[in-house]
Image (cartoon, rainbow, N blue to C red; front, side, top):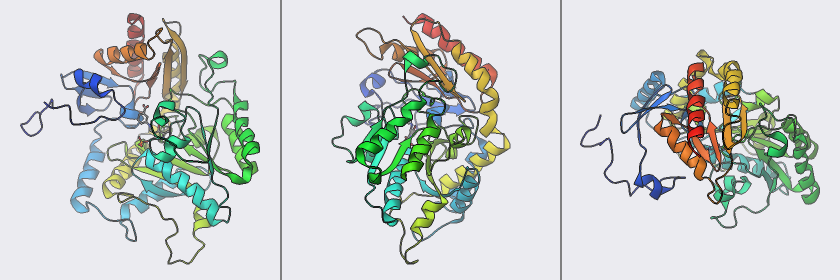
Length: 443
Ligand code: PXG
């Protein structure tokens, strides 16, 4: 409800410098969300909008989950904050144990952060420090991938491959190189699931190994399915090939599962879905159903153990955040896990993937649609750009969808779908039905 202290529509939109937003365009015609429940948002003008994006790929169990709200309320009343540097409190120990029990292979330790960006920077730092504690400090290079998104810290934008996210920010980290991305419309347009063509693109890593000398390379980081850049499922066999090349040369493989973690593909993590175990895995978003910010980095046993070798009164890793393992986040995380497991949300994507895929590919043949891509409960439709006006068509479609009751995301010429995992077939039909209608209406 609107009150004097908290008006429904703020009368000053100016002071908030909005992230990743065209501020002037937005503030001229704002879109405010004021309420949310399950699959829907309510807008400031009282309309219901279906959440086709699980917020920002993060509200996996749907909005307004009472159990999570109550767990956070109980926690804040009992222990609002406790330091995790040389002190501790119970919840994150339980959360780490429960999370690592879900992971494949010997990924068995969790380091907590507050976001995906912090998880990525933490993972890169752990990779560098790991080699150093083993006496291989000469491994300083980090390899990322074109079109990769790894958040917005300096580490993340350095290994990331989205040009706009890099070009304003100077020299970035040194010692970074990139393999090619896997997006190829000529070979893979309208692929259902993993494209058949492109496993050989993983051999780019071998090329960089030969160029730089493997003894200088610490880690290679990729999103198992690139999300922000417009949903790029990996070609069949691609991730296995990356794993083999890393193994051959002592390079750590990092999977950035900030989007793919917590059931997005119909398995708890993409590592399990693809049968490829990374050495380090990052996550955030769905970890707490996005109710309280939290991220985590999971590492294999050998990595943690390598740090536990010096004098036992010494700090082993000089890294951490004031809010690492924050009590409210840990409470939200534990309760989100309860819900995911009880409601079978980690595997629900598997049951719905076929219907979701058919619905997405129903957009094929509509005006200006040049590709549809999907995996699990992620999908994207790519449009031909309007001559001389890049991204204008996708933006207009995004806006029209919002006006017609569907929240999607647009990046470049691509619109994406990543609904809460509680989505039902009728919601899927409505989402893609709205999108089809709007694509036909927007020239
Ligand atoms: N890694 C990956 C793979 C991500 O998708 C991050 C790291 C960074 O997480 P934080 O919590 O620091 O934002 C992300 C974030 C979008 C979009 O739709 C995607 C993200 C964030 C905001 C928007 O393009 N992913």
